[in-house]
Length: 145
Image 1 (cartoon, rainbow, N blue to C red):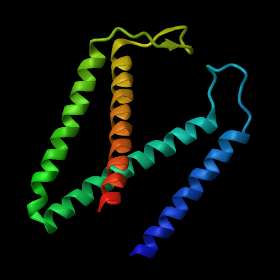
Image 2: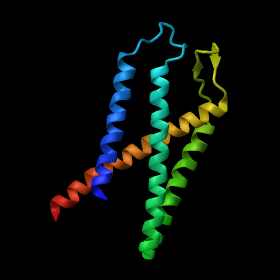
Image 3: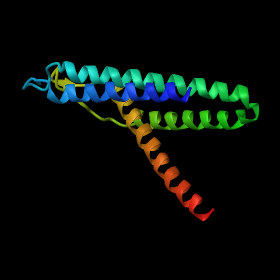
Image 4: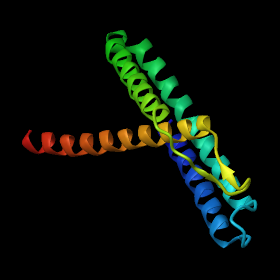
């Protein structure tokens, strides 16, 4: 099973690298509002990888709860924490009046789009900060053991 997962990881990394090279070497129009086929393809690949990551995380959590029912408390606590972070980010974003320029239509995006964008950015910042603090704390904790 581990060999299959390593092969799958290699294929995914190869496709990602090929798409990155394609985006870098392809011709781009002078006008930034025009369509970039290579960038769009990279965005769709990112969406596919993101959906696969979410699906695998949910599947692994379900399998883990079935194999070890005592871990349900930690899983529920993690889920509640995620909902709280997303909820707080959403309410912070909804309270702001940010205008993002829409180059294609020569105007601004609506409030709904800006709220979703700002919520995503805040959740990403929180996730990066938690990952950084966790990595540092884990290294410090293992150094003292």
